[in-house]
Structures are given as structure tokens and as C-alpha cells.
View 1 (cartoon, one colour):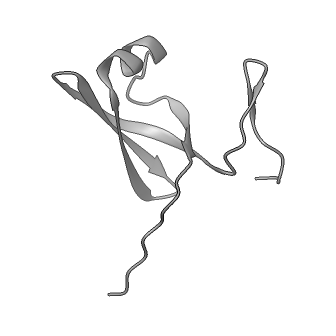
View 2: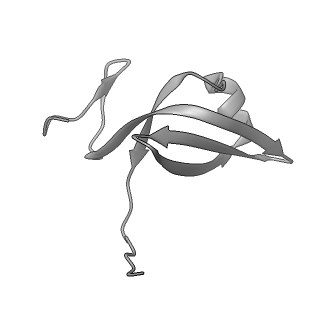
View 3: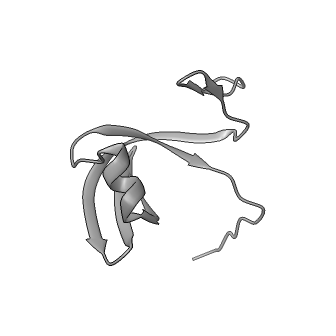
Length: 78
């Protein structure tokens, strides 16, 4: 991905960590939803509000963009 922010609906995002992936599962329980994405063979799991998942119309099989904006990133070693 280039160094330029992705533009969605006329809004530029400052987050540089933007990953495209295919939705493999969406599960909702109460007010939260779990969205699983396959990104190049790796799984990314996002917890978002169920209302947001419904508003975005998140469906298994579609391609979405994961935008990661974090003040902390942990790494580990096997």
C-alpha cells in the first residue's frame, strides 16, 4: 500500500495501518459483534459494536478494509 491515506467517502484517514481482507465469519452477541478477516492467510479478529456491523452490512465473503490505529503494539517470540 502506498504512503497515502485511503480515501473513503471523501474522508482521508490518518491511520497508516490499513489491511484488506475477506470476511470469514461474523458473530453477534448482545451489543458487540466479532468480525474475522482473512488477510493473506493470516486471521485478524475485530470486535465492533453490533450496530456498526449492521450499519456497514458486514457479510461473510465480502472484502473489507481493516484500519488499525493504536497507541500500543505488542510483539512476542515463540
